Picture 1: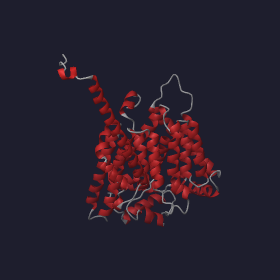
Picture 2: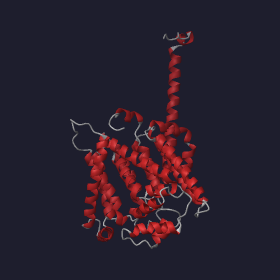
Picture 3: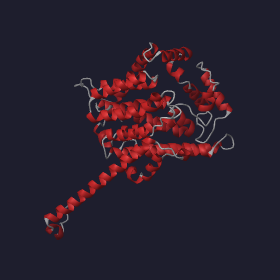
Picture 4: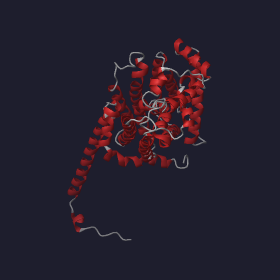
Length: 432
C-alpha cells in the first residue's frame, strides 16, 4: 500500500515554523504534566489525612470523585485496576440489595447502609487516584505525600492516644514517612536501619502485631540482598511460596521472643495466657475469627451493608467463640463487634458480612493482587521496604484487621502494588 503524497504546504513550511510548533506542543505538555503532578500531590495528602465528613464520607473521597476523568483511563494500564474497581462497585450494590431483602425481617438502617457504601466505593475511587499519581511521580513520592497526609490527620488528643500513643496513633504514619524517605536512596542498609529503629519502638510500646510486621519486612528486605542465582530465573509463584514459608518462620520466631519476654513482662503474660486458653496465639489474640467462621457456616450469603445483628446471630457468633474457650459475654463483643452492625475485626469477614459473596470475591481479589505485586517485585529484587511493609500489613489486616480502619493503607498499598501491564508482559510465562 503506497503512502499518500504530502501536501505542498507541509513540504514548503519553514523549518523555524515547524520547530516553533514542536516547541509549543512540548511546552504545553510540560505545563499540563506539572499541573497534573501538583493536583495529584494535593489529592494524595488529602486522601491520607482522611478528613471526616458526614455519613462516612471523607474529603479524599470527594476529591477522587472529581478526578474520575483523569484517573479512570489509567486503570487499564495496570493488571487488576479495572477488575478491582468493578468488584468494588458490584459489592456495594450487592450490599444494598441484601439490605433491601432483609428489610422487614431484620433491623436495618439507611444511615448505616449509606456509610458502609460510601466507604467501600470511596476506597475504590481513591485507589484510582494513587494509580494515576504513579504515572506522574516516583513511588517514593507517592508514599511520602500520602504519609504526610497521615501525619496531618493525626489527632494527638484522640481516645486512643492516652493509652499507647505510639502503638495506636503515631506508628503507622511515622513508618510510612520514614520508609518513603529511605526509598529515595534505594539503599537496603538504610531501609534496614529504619526498620530496626521502628521495631525497637514497637518492642517497648507493647505493639505485638506492629513488631511482627516490621520484623517480617526486615527479613524480606534482607532476602533480596542474597546473591542472585545464575541458573534459575526468579519466579513470582516460587517467591509467593517462599513468602509463606518465611512468614511461618517469622511467626514462630516472633512468638518465641514474646514468650521469652522480649516485649516486656505484661505482653509476655498476656501472650502466654492467650496461648494456654485457645491453644494458639492467633486464635487467642483474635477470637473474632471463631465468630466469623461460625457466622459463615450459618449465613453463607452474608447480611447486608445496612443490617444490624440480631440476638440469634450474636448467639451464633458467641458459640463460635466459646469453642476456643473465649468468654464472649462482655462489652467488647456486645458493643463493638455487634453494637453498630457487624465488626468482625478482619477485612475478609467485614466485606463478607456487609456485601455478601461479592464482598468475599473482592477480598479474595485484594489478597491475590497483594501477593502478586509483592511476589513480582521481590522476584525482581525491586521491592522497597515501603511496599513490603504495606503489603505485609495489608495481608495481616485481611485476616485480623477491621475493614474501616484498614482502608486508608489499603488504598496506598493497592495503588503501588498493582503491576503495570508493560512490566507484567515482560514476565509472560512466569505467572498467569
